[in-house]
Length: 322
Image (cartoon, rainbow, N blue to C red; front, side):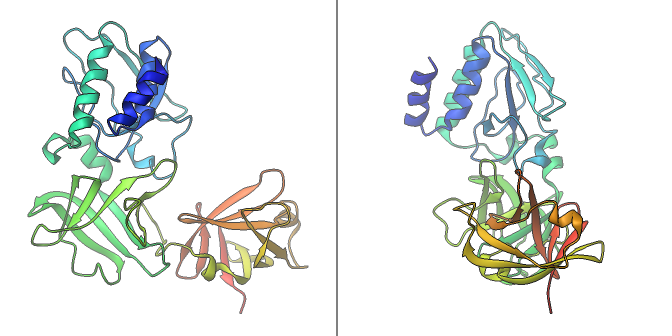
């Protein structure tokens, strides 16, 4: 049945993971899934809370963290008897459907085929999970724009204010944000859509695949102000822990001897024992991250800031060796 539904989903332009996810649930298996913003797929019947594109993951993918709390359970009346509970390990939802579960599946198909979910149908929980600071940044590595998505309504959607850094072309252009295809859109004062973002599997929010250069939309960016590029990363760096130098290293253009899809790292002779222990020998750019790779599956991710790169926990910094 899963194969047949997979073909049907492709014919209707659906994301096939939603089909397999619900198929597993209908056959009595527990299906782990999270609900986060992407191409709109409404799954609503008998007061089931509206939600967006569903995907099955064993863990929350990067960029989806703000939506851990969106799914609050299924509020159902009538002929449906689902059992829903939050999964503590993934922040997702465990769903077991009994009885007329096909009603849910049919409604998902119908709503998906229509391709639209109006802003009026988005619940307050989704709005609350979306508001806050975001970074708009191009894949070309130019300095981006920090904006704050607000909850109050205005012309064209909801209010937007500029954050601590906002460079052209976004400066003074963005007046509102809203939920619309392809996911979250930004509009100017005349209601014209400036750009739209969708959630990509296992990655960050960004413009649809046909938009070039890609523009990323990153929630809770912290000190991040741009997207890393390989050209920016090449050269000599100093790795430090809260200001204390740990190691001089070079990010090389040559291909890693161990990994075909990564470049080589050369460590200096002054590296601390804690750094040598990781056996760092490779690096690569993975969407919004600079990824430092060592032996035994040791991986550390960093994002760019005004001084170079900073680790996700803010502890480690990479600064140019001057």
